[in-house]
Amino acid sequence: MFATGENEIEPLNKHGEDLSNLLEEVDELRMKTLKEILGILTPIQGVEYLATAKRIRLCLQQWGKKREQEHNSN
Image (cartoon, rainbow, N blue to C red):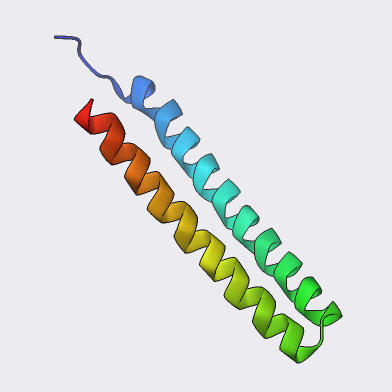
C-alpha cells in the first residue's frame, strides 16, 4: 500500500473547503433570486410559484428514483 503523507491530503482538504464555500455562495444566490422573484409577484402569484416549484422538484425526484431503479435492475 501507498503511504499517505500530510502533503497528499492537504489538497483534498482544500478542495473540500472550496466546494463547501461554493455551495454556500450558490445557496445565497438562490435565496437572493427567490426573494427578487417574490418581490415582483403578487402574494397570490408568489404562493402559486412556490407551490408549482415544489411540485416540479418532487416530480423530478420521483423521476430520478425511477430511473435509478431501472438502471440498477438492468
